Length: 77
Image (tube, rainbow, N blue to C red; front, side):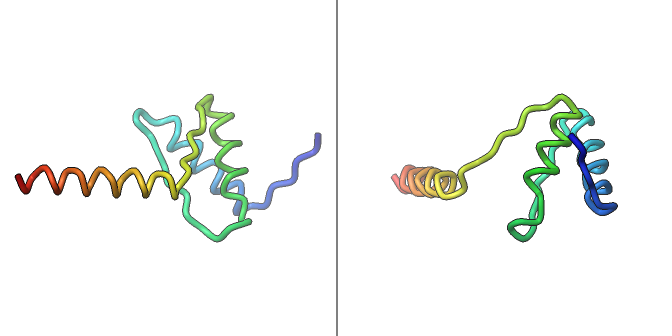
């Protein structure tokens, strides 16, 4: 399979690969939809022999809201 990567994609790939290879290395990729964040992240994780954890954001926000409300109520009593 032939793979074509642009220079900017290679820069991001090498930067992310270096971060993932560090002890306790982690990264948060933020950008416009359709810019290839997921593809670059999965490729960097594969080359760094890491696994990818993808969060379902609405579920995470709801869980955090429940935790904050619950902890706030328990502090009132």
